Image 1 (spheres, rainbow, N blue to C red):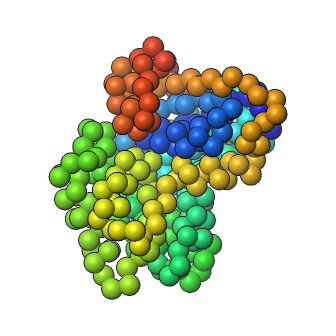
Image 2: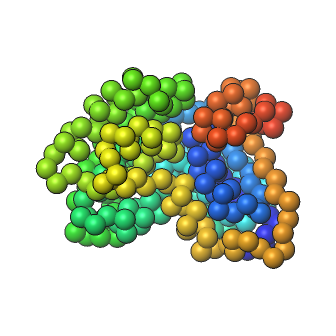
Length: 270
Ligand code: DGL
């Protein structure tokens, strides 16, 4: 793959910045194009057909940037749209969130009991269940849809009492059972923001799987980590609505400032 071409990353909005952050720390010499479909989020509550159509629109847009690979930095879009994205991308490698996270979870789990938290759409589709069983037919899966966490993360409430009590409501039925999971997939790109609270609640005996980290390991198989032909990396951000709001909220997901001038408003053709 050419080191000079950017890596294309897209998400329903802002959550994919947690994936971009992980990718950048693994590939500091690579340039990135990030597209957030802020006009049409959330994807997690929409039908599979709608999400697949949105994913196709974003893929066509990202292909205009002559990318070397596409990362679908949204679990819901990976669930419903990966086949469509791959068909449009032709010979450009495409990495979704589901298979890499499932693979990491199966190799991390000692007991074979894996928990999954994700959006309503991702859980309803059973994408994680299928991917985990493909990796380990004997594994046991406990999953729960946690759509409200998406709104809490966007509101900047990831580290509040409300988040804590919401997490208890979702996670207690799974983790208060006997022989509870020893591994938990954070199956939505917003959820790494809750990792500190989840770790505090579940303790060190439960390994958390971050989809951005897992996808980075997959990408590492495709590109060299420190190319000899070093370039000065560039990152371009595009959104379909309100660059100002995206920039203001970005720091929570990205641990870095993005100014409104860094973000370009685009119109995605349906
Ligand atoms: N980024 C989406 C995901 O990872 C969650 C946000 C949404 O519902 O759009 O599933």
